[in-house]
Length: 374
Image (cartoon, rainbow, N blue to C red; front, top):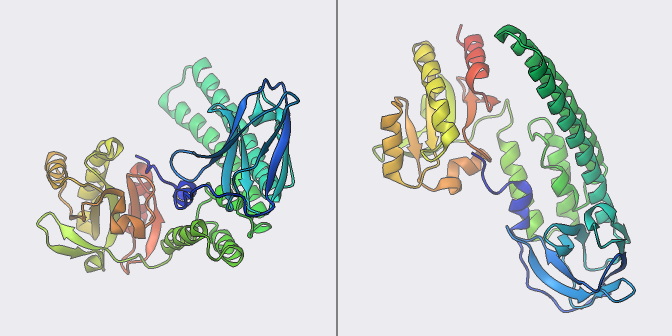
């Protein structure tokens, strides 16, 4: 199950500032065709819900101008309705002109005077193109599966073929985004674009963006939080030493992850309330039974809050490997240290406590353990 806050939203939630009266030469104005004197709203994307910071009425010629608010660097939108809006990245010294059709702001708006917004739209165009290719591939796969009756072997072969194509599309998209971010490591818009990238594969990109933003916006709370996110995301890179975990077990006694040195250890993040975690548990149990006598151990970390629910889930699912928790849900100190964004989530460690791989489940986990514990 996915955590509700990911990198971008974690940054955006940091600084929901109060509207500020104009203290600079900031300008945000424009002209919309097809308008009928509607009220246009300026909203700051600074929390889980947009915050309205200003409004104006579009005049009879389609002109508008916001005059009561000076933004700090961040993500904003101008909207007519919740479904009809245009995204902007604004800063206090911008002088921006926006044009477009009031009937469809999102697909028609053009911005002059904002390098950040221009870069944001370039990132967005890349994402749209990638989504289009992925959607087309999925439709083609569904058509192929529906048109031909196959046995399980042929279905697996077809699935693998499409999976390879899908991975090539995603890898190509990630490479394009990484290249553009590397050219724009001082641009605030790049915080949004970096989200799909794998921190293990693109560690240098994350660090470069972190350094660039910190140099340009050293006092910005959003940038400070992004720095923390990057530190956590890169702290668990494959090949590095796994962060220590030392939480209370089912009896309330501290149990350190490092106490299992000398064994191959799977750190398994889960929770009693997580449906996919509980569904996956029989597969985890099967792997445990098969390899525990060969030097394999599982170190379960529960993201529960209710101790009784945690205990009952362990008993009901027949979990026999060590379990720990601080009963803090997503604020679990171990989840933060390992940058856990969704569960079930696993981290496989070697006998020296170094990270071998992350996110292994099912067949992939069994294949890796067979390789390591011959």
